[in-house]
Length: 464
Image 1: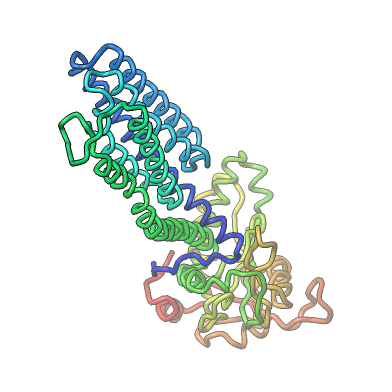
Image 2: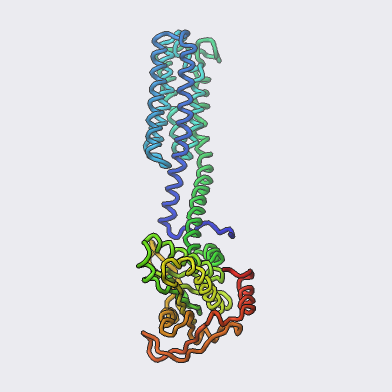
């Protein structure tokens, strides 16, 4: 199959909706990843408390365990919310998660204030590094404003805690750098707060670029999926070559049509009513499926288009929506092969006690070929006098005792190798005057000439 271009979004509303779905999916995936890290941190926190809790005061341990349990509870809430909203994270969840994560980390200040070393442990114990990690992880949400929110929140929280520490005298300040001495050099701490917050603002820039790339990838993935569905839908009633052309040119799939000279074919299953009276419904459906499968295979072999199924028959077109060379000859050779295939299928259902056969009416002329319906539900079809005439010729087979009837224009355009029988001018129901028709006797065809035609039309051996 030829590679088709991405599905073209036909309206601004459709493009906006596709973009919104891609945004939701990116945010959901980011929240899932962050929650997994959150759960990992909860487990590591519990392991550290169990391993080194004896070095802390009971009061500090109580706060640390409460901090870990609060984080675990929030991780569980996020897990449930994300499971209930597959591929779409509620808008409130990300800001709430940022707030909870920042508050949980800031709660370490309370634990440090109750521990042996005092609040200086908060500033020198690696908590600011955890704020930096949290801000980096916010970038997974691919939202610049959420990254700025995280970076800004960590800066404000820690600036407020530093001011509180200095104002209340909870720490001893030093005029020079004094890391590890139990006192704080305020400019160093301010710099540490800035460094811990900076990833949030840096990730905002990264998220902006990554977001556009990821969203584009998501939209193209969705577009390719839509293309595959459209291809599969069209391939049910159009030849593969026609489908590929239409997939490359989305304009051909829009409502409307154009005038074309085409050959219209109507095929009907004879004795279907009598057969269905003798078979169970399941058997009848099975026979119909075999019939349609065999007929459509021959139709597509000669690049015909399946227009629609009509109960126990169908309408087909040669030369629309895509032009094909020698459309009348293709239609007649396909009809001959359908009659031959029908004989084999009739043998397969001989137990029904009713011989099966088909009647084929073929007419050539100018039609309006295109897509009709509504934007939500449309189908390809042809409209014009040849359509009505082909339908009438199919029914006329019963009166004339033939299997394949052609109008004069189809007979005129046929390859000379096809043997026809002139049936003269006959009245056709629903049409004024008389219509000149010709019959095609399958058994009167010269096998060598017929095989040569098959080879020239589809370049292969005999099908069926």
